Image (cartoon, rainbow, N blue to C red; front, side, top):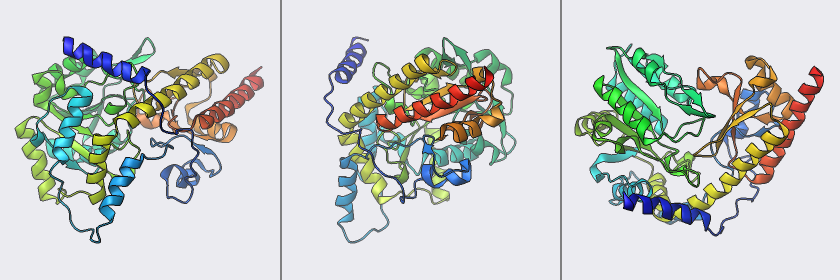
Length: 414
């Protein structure tokens, strides 16, 4: 207990005393780079000349140590088939212990080309068609896709809001479970709400799922982005029960702004579950990864902690700005204060704009591209998700645009 306290205290001190070495105010033009957040504006929003704050990647420069690793490998004249480097699993093991005090074994982990593909693999491995898979909406929308596109039955266990934050509804969960319920997909930390699930909630979830023979797939891609003063707890770490039923997916992609490399990892403590997962990857020829993904992952986990802390400190400033601005100038919008990551969940309910018209209002009146909350499932109506991982001047500009649009609505109603 004392060591854990020292770990938390030290982490907090590092954030408080951090010297900002990197320039997160730099404006980088992402046009002509095939960036999804720009290229799909005409298709999804009907307007290419709006400010994109929707896709969950950053507008910060990917750190130099990532490029250095890629460049060093690219100097060799052959880009052939590549096996994971000898230190790949060890690096993941060390990072998990350093960041989360989770002591995993090297043979528990392996490469997977993206967390969403990993979720889809797990659905196919551990369920049959028409089996039930539970998710906790509003939640990351690909959870819905990987269930429905694989012909599994989607079961909603909606989250509740208490004191302005999401919490799990365990009574509803127990009511929804049947003999056909095989999986629960957990978002830990939560996206879009930014909630870091507390250890008590995770333990209770583990007990319920263990007692009902349900495997828990924990998406922990935002786990390395707990904001200053908060600490992420891996689901599999909370108890032996959780460890026995868990499949964890993690990645450096969000934290170090390298999602285009599609470098992710699975961590499966239970040897039976791990054998099934690895067998699926093997028989579908999914074992191999990208040359640069391996190198970038190792560089991120070995050299990236200071950059990570600086980025989170900067993001924290953007989040505080947005919440303060909304509370002061647009109180009709309610912002859920995230505990992790760079996404903010906004509630527009008080404005009385129909949910089906909210996106077009934000696009046409505010000139912004945000994520429509309905894509996150029940509870997402009249909500929007905004990404503030960008230079602060862009955040300030977005808030001014939003205020102007809301002022016009209120003026029309007066």
